Image (cartoon, rainbow over all chains, first blue to last red):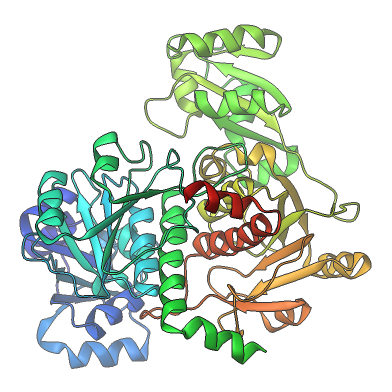
Amino acid sequence: MITSTANPTIKLIRKLHEKKERLQTGLFYIEGLRIVIEALQQGAEVECLVVAPDLLTSEFGWQRVEEENRRGLQVSQGVFTSLASKQNPQGIAAVVRQRWQDASSLRLASQDLWVALDSVADPGNLGTILRTNDAVGGKGVILLDNSTDPYDLTTIRASMGAIFSQGLVKTTFEQFLQWKQDHDYALIGTSDRASADYCQASYPLPMILLMGSERLGLSEEHMRACDQLVSIPMVGRSDSLNLAVAAGLMLYEIFNQQRERSGQHGSEKQRKG
Amino acid sequence: MITSTANPTIKLIRKLHEKKERLQTGLFYIEGLRIVIEALQQGAEVECLVVAPDLLTSEFGWQRVEEENRRGLQVSQGVFTSLASKQNPQGIAAVVRQRWQDASSLRLASQDLWVALDSVADPGNLGTILRTNDAVGGKGVILLDNSTDPYDLTTIRASMGAIFSQGLVKTTFEQFLQWKQDHDYALIGTSDRASADYCQASYPLPMILLMGSERLGLSEEHMRACDQLVSIPMVGRSDSLNLAVAAGLMLYEIFNQQRERSGQHGSEKQRKG
């Protein structure tokens, strides 16, 4: 059992709270029973489990730890607390390998839906968008230019496990545009300046939904790259919605139209009647 | 100019970061140029402006401060920083009186839409719901039982000013139910166990949308109180959406149906064609 917070491995793990270190190592850190179990269940590449026997009280947790024993690292309560980002930690954490898809070799199947985010800044928004995209059967998220790191703990928590199931691609807008043009994929963006109502447009799959950053929305250049621009109407005092809410509205409109086409919508109606 | 962080007024203002103190005084604290201007523009009851001349560089900010001079409190940079929750503060803050509507005397007009939240826990979610409800023309939010304090800085920031325009009511579920029954208002709730698809239901105004807490959703008791229960379909791995996203989907479905009924939707369609 590791009892020193200065242990070199512990120091390396602690550094994974920093974006720079995650970038360099290609690893990330997760903590809590639920998220660690999610990672294992979804076949994430868990490099190492970190367990504090004094803190881990869940029987189910212990069962899983024993199954994964070869990768376990036992640490004292003090060492675990020095790693944990939350108070009252559950005594289980893991170091996991990041999983990125290559931008240029990505191909969309006929029913695929992806979200491209330009310079998304808020880790919670990114996690929530991953969660919603998973809910509508979307395949993944393409992070353009200066987007926040999806392997930040806040993003991971907000994604509720979708961080392990959603595809992740990181690229520049320029390369993204070239790729979109090469494969003639449909790109649909949202802008408060668009005249088309998001409920009136139709969304053929495969497609990529492009959303701008929280602060600036889509730039002129981004808007020009879109095959279609739609707006979400608002009658209140404010001129914008929260990014994760706007993305949720778009994703569900696309999903609802798809359900309608495939008749799932209709059958719901009949079941009701 | 106040230069001591131990000044009694400054100590009182600093305490407003705590929920308990906000509850006792009926006041709250906001900081940053944008939000303070919002408060003034929307006629919030600003008790006192707090200005650090060394930090406030915005000319527009100074203009507004001069207009509101009688309520100004000048403080040193050090004092301001001791109050501020953010790094690099803009040198302007305010103490504002909370504005609650009385639960029992609340009456809904024919087109009114309210959201009732049971034990909402996340300040960011509450702020985002206020923001979305403002966007669809909703009137306000009814906070049931152990809901988080809307006058928390995180909620205020996430609301993007809607904290000043939306009605706020705080009550128990029991009293809420009595009030709903007395006035025969329609209450519609969401639950993953409901068989009706949220897109297939129809939402007559006035109505109250009831959403459960992040962790537990609606209880049996809450569901029984609803006139109608709907579910938001999901095909992914997870069994729930983020609360603010789910509320956004419901609010926009209600808003879209209302637009359709009033013909605004149709005219959008014609404009497109």
